[in-house]
Image 1 (cartoon, one colour):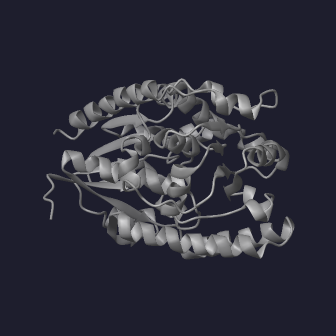
Image 2 (image 1 turned 45 degrees about the horizontal axis):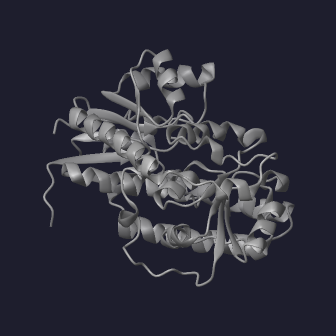
Length: 372
């Protein structure tokens, strides 16, 4: 059994994952957990939960949405089945806090013991959920924000009013998007931009070398989130492209797309199976931040579709990651051909150099603020 020098308690998206099947959210914690081991830091994921009734409310909401968009029993079954798989991954692969907490008061009364407390990554600062700002941490204990995301370019005055003092109480702040640096600066807080945790570990840390592929034939893989407008996916073009490539089409859609995507293409997977589909896909289509990240990790040709309407604010993080890796030309808009983007080579050597440079910045951040 490994002996660790320090203990970290991390709060991120556990409450969200308890009711939603979001692959990026679960892997960002897993990646940070694995990364911190290189510093001899043992970590636990604080099991901060919304009240049980809210999870049932989410399931009822999904059922109602399914009725509104044309009853889809497969969607409800997929959600429940995948939730079970997510729970299994959390209990098998993620270090979880001994206690569960369903209120900030309970966290303040009896927080998990740790040398350092970390919030992030993911959109922990997209709202003003108090626990995500580590207000429960005992006096004298170190508080760090790692690659925290506001999920938007600017904050409303109300948002700023709620969180400014909390953010000012951190010992060190790093954010995931460059816009987050500016937001922190407006609060009088010094912050730096660092990599999302999922980019701190390698492909082999997610899937063993030589892992058997789950799909025997050629396939095109899509990962979509939020959108409920069929036209925003250029889905007919993607279907036609898959047929021209003599490849089947597999789509994972969550938080909206599953309501409108034809059922013959729609799948939800366990976290491990989702990774497997990334690894062996011919190419990737996505409209999500972590959809891009795992295309980079598995070195896949990919196209990015921007989100529109209310969900367009999510594009801030998409622009940020594409700019970081000099991949802005992967955006598929109405004027571009799928073939032209997929055929354009990606300089993976350059991608790895960029990744390594930013990993070194993260190493320096933790060396300084963990005092190791």
